[in-house]
Length: 342
Length: 282
Image 1 (spheres, rainbow over the protein chains, first blue to last red):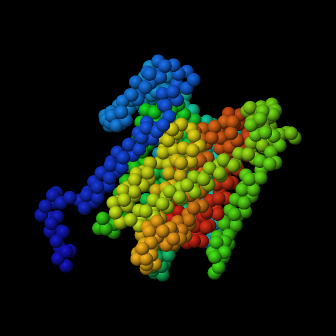
Image 2 (tube, rainbow over the protein chains, first blue to last red; image 1 turned 180 degrees about the vertical axis):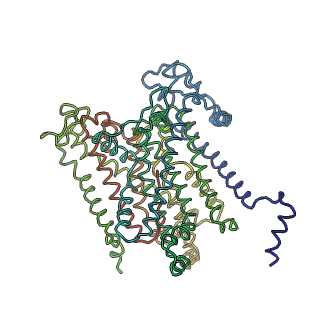
C-alpha cells in the first residue's frame, strides 16, 4: 500500500527534480544509435577507401593522364595514411563540410562541393518517402484489420494471396511492370519522373504516382500481413471474447477494444518497414530517373566517386539508424510493461 | 511420421504446391533452356528492336541480338549466384554462431557486436559501397550478399547453440575429452541444423532479390552478359518500340521470386519456426 502513496507524495514534494522514467532509456538508446553510426562510418570508409582497386584511375577511366591522376590523388589525399584521411573526412562531415565530388571535377575541371549537389535531391527524396509513408500507414492498418476481421473468408484469402505475391517482387520489377502497363500500354502517366531544371516536384505531382505505387507494393503487402497477424492474436484473446459475450457490437469490439492492443506491435512493424523502404527508394528512383538522393548514390557508385558515395551513404545510414531507434522508443512508449523491464 | 513426410509436409498447403510447381518449371527453364536457344545470346543476328517475328519469336534487342536466346540463357546467373551467396552465408554465419554460442569468453560479445554493426547498414548501401571500393566484380558481389545474411544467421545459430550446449550429451562429449571442434561438429551442429535451415528458402529469395537489383543497377554482371535483370535495364530505352525485351525478363523475375518465396514460406510454416518472417535483405 505504501508504494501507492509514495510516488504521489514525491511528485508533490519535488516536481521538477525527478527525471522522467523514460528519459534514461531514451538517452541510452540515442547514445547507442550515435555509437553505432560512428562504427558504421568506419565501415563505410574502409569499404570505399581501403579495399584494393585504384580509385583515381577508375574515376578517370580511359582519359587518365599522369597529371590528372596526381590531381585526383591529391584531392582525395590518397597519399596520406588511411586513419588520418578518415579523421579528416569525419571531422569535416560533422562540421557540415561534405567535400567535393571527384567525378564532376573530372568533367568540369574544378571541384564541385557535394553540399550544393544534394540539397534539392534530399528534398525530392523526402517528398517521395513522405507520400509513401502517408499512404502506407492508414492503408496497411485498414487492410490488416479488415483482413483479420474476416479471417478465413474469401476477402481475407484474396488479401493474403495478393500480399504473398507482391511481397517478394523486387522494386525494379514492380516499377518496370507498372511502366509497361500504365505508361506504355494505357498511356496514362509519365513513365519517367524527370523534373525540369528550375521547377520543383510539387508542380509535377503526377510523376510521383508510379514511384509511390512501386514503393507501396512490397511494403504494404508486408505490413498488412503483420498487422493482420497481430490483430488476429488480439481477437483471439479472452478479453475480446468477454467483450463479445457482453453483447458489444463487433465493430466496437474491434475498434475500441482490440485495436488499441494490436496497435503497439503494429507501430514497430510500420517503423521497420519504413526502414526497409530505404533500400527500395534507391532502386525506385533509379527506375524512374527521379532526381533524388538514391539516384545520385547509384550514379556516384557507377563513377566510383568516393567522396560523393561516402556523404550520401552517411546520410542514408543516419536515417536508417534513427528509424531503428525511433521504432524502439515508440514501442516502449506504447507498451508500458517494457519500461520496467529495461 | 517419417522423415520424408516431414520434409514434404510443406507441399500440402495450396500456396506451397503452386510455388513448388512454379519453381520446378522455372528451374527446368533455367537449366535446360540454353540448349534450346535458337541463336547465340551475345551474337548480333538481326535488325535492332524488331517486334516478335517468325525467326525471332520474342524479337530483337537494341543491338540486334535475339531476345529469346538471351532469355533462355539469362536465368542462370541470378539463381546460380544467389544459391552460392546463400550457401556461403550459412557456412560463415553458422561458424560464427557456433563459436559465439559455445565459447564463454570475450570472443562471444566481440563477434556479436560486430554482427550488430553489420545489421545497422542497409544491405543495398553495403553492396553499393563495396562496388565503389572494389569495383564491379562478381566475386565481391557474391561475398557482399553473403555478408548481408551473416549477422542474422549467426544470431539464430548462437541462440540455438547456447540452448543445446548445456544438454547432457554435450557435457558427456566434453567429459570424454573430445576436442572443441569435434563437439561442435558432431554434437551441436546436427541439433541446431533444423532451426537454422528453416528459413533458408526465405534467405534464398532475399538473395535473388538483392542480386537482381544490383544487376539491374548495372553494378553486377556487365554487358554483353545475358542476365534477366541486366536485360531489363539495357532494353528500357527501347521500351516503346520493343516492349517484349523488357516485359518478358521482368515477368520471369516476378514469377521466380514469387514461386521461390511461396515454397520458402510454406517450408518455414511447416517447420513452425519463423512466424515473424522478416525481409532479410532490402
